[in-house]
Image (cartoon, rainbow, N blue to C red; front, side, top):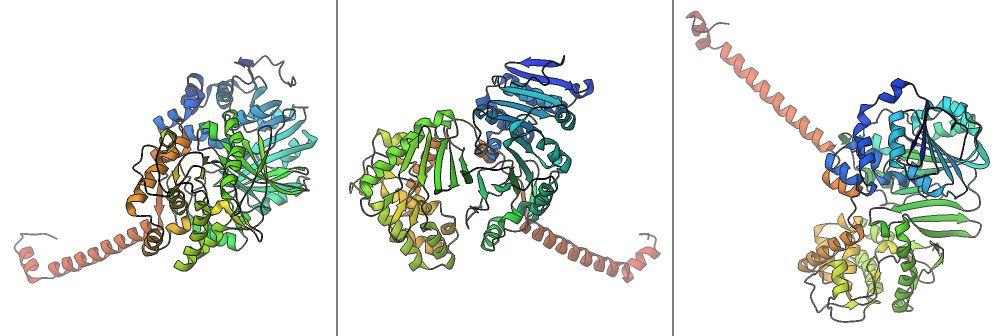
Length: 581
């Protein structure tokens, strides 16, 4: 552990954590009553119940500081057990915990003593954590340590002076991670209100890095933004059309929506302009070595035992997909995926190849299949509204699904009910006892040689109706949701998906999602309880129409009044003194 500041007479020991406030004044230590509720929660609440408190109070500041989704911004970045980490602008420790889990030591700095106190109580069980409260420049200037990883989140701290300062504290092979919002991010152009912190365009950041002496850097694009990230893209793996649909993340204030961001994102992607309007940037300064991550996706809206991180790696051997546990509890789930792949491979035969993984410890690695995603064909068919093209894509998927058929009847057992609930599924439906329920369009890759099935997380070894798998693929297709009702009904009729069956399969899906989600409260629960407040362009159109109608009514009333005032009757009433004016 570092000792460069630990001889101070203002060091508190909170659990196993050292908190140094020698860079703070007495006034600083007593300020910030706004954090008192937060401090009370981290002192007296089990961390697994933080989000329960957030929803109970319906508080944006509590959500901002306590949501585990905040960790997704950096959780995918490789950190070894030998790494020493410096976290600048740690606030109340939204990212500190995940750094402590991975690194050898973590030193967190924040200007706010109360924020540091929250951080210390929140992570009091980590003996590898030191926290310093005080002005960042002053603290860093007094530091003579070197670090393998320096984290700098937030535009307010970013400057040429800061970069030059931290550059003195990075090891030869170290990296600096910077996260900022984009001043021309699409959410701001669409009507989201900025929070007042400094924001940078991509070109401004590139100029700043060069001026500060950095020439080796990689840009990443957190989506939806740097606060509540669920995917991270790069210049080597940009989003595809239809990927960017979760754009309402304004929990602090009402926002305006002047146009459909998802559609505009699709247009931006079509024109290769996504990097310029990404809502946020994450930049890694320094070499990433031979094995570079070009894409990351966090599956955190689940029970901890099912939470994983999926990354795509680029190295001298090509591209590879890796899955790792997001939580320690997820190791059994990772191991089950290999079993699922072998099970599915035993029933698909020659019709399709199942991408097999190699397991090393708690990491699964699979080759990256280059080909045309079946979802791409299906989306194009839906976009042009061609029933024949839609049938062609659905036929192809359903042929793959029916490879899993083992029975012409369905009988539910206890295993089925545990996952999908007790449902009134008709008995006379084709079923399989080895079924990949997530065999959706996006999980089929078409190549010149054969079709590949990827992502075998959810393969079950009990009878499941195959129609449910097809219904599920259609249900989760954004493109299909946008076709006309008549085309939808034609597709449902063609594949025997009556409205009664669709109702049953929807109930199955709701039970399945509850099974995956578990009992812990998550960001999605907060969104359901407190959906983002949005004023769409239609609101302003309606207000303008309302104002025009009021203006027209006022004009009519003014003309009526003029007619009254100019009438003989009014003049007579004035002459008799009955009215005045």
